Image 1 (cartoon, rainbow, N blue to C red):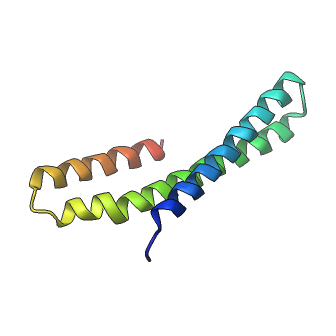
Image 2: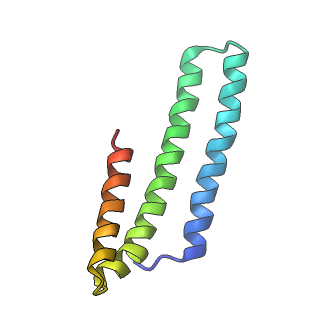
Length: 94
């Protein structure tokens, strides 16, 4: 699958901006003492948007930066890329 860099940027930014908007709504809802379940539903929507943005960025990184590093003859670069992927994966799974 060929991924357009502009599409990756557009799609990830769209999800991040939607998440930002939802967070502002959640803050207002908490300030207004709105029903907890309604607040939690909005919170879950933000989590979903952030996960989606994360996966778009990760997919792009693996297909381009990571792929290029692994194909190179530079062993240090390969190890650094593997370490970066492991670090981000561990953080995502906390």
